[in-house]
Image (cartoon, rainbow, N blue to C red; front, side):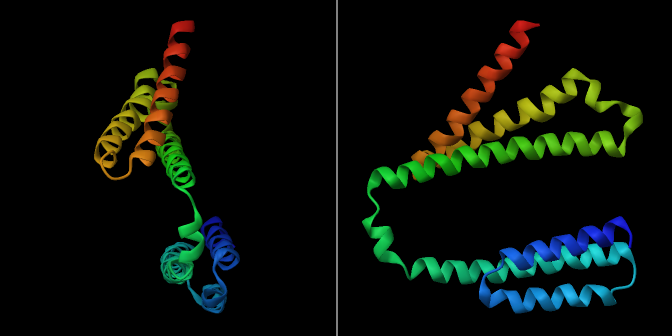
Length: 171
């Protein structure tokens, strides 16, 4: 079994574990069908599509579950809602930085002769400048209706900017 097929099987097993009860039977069937896909890359692409379908189906189940539980949502005070919004903005910003770092590492893996990881300006642009621009645009867009989320994004942007400033000041 090649690496793409192994990754495809692991991906579908993870989807099976994370899926709600209504989607598990479907996810298990897709995992069993993986054995009948010819070619490792075809299996990987099939698993990626299957995982997307499983999570879309699961999202409708989760949405239905949480929209029917309005009593708990009504009991949550305004401070709790703002804290959740702030933390989701913070987490979203962190994920953007991780994705940018992943893109840089993928570029280094795919094009090792360019030595992208060893170039300071490539790192600064990919992992610092572009995410910071995204953070500012998202915060401006979200501020009128989702101020707590925008505050979380801005908090992460300021913390990352301060980290970068200290890093370059020490050199």
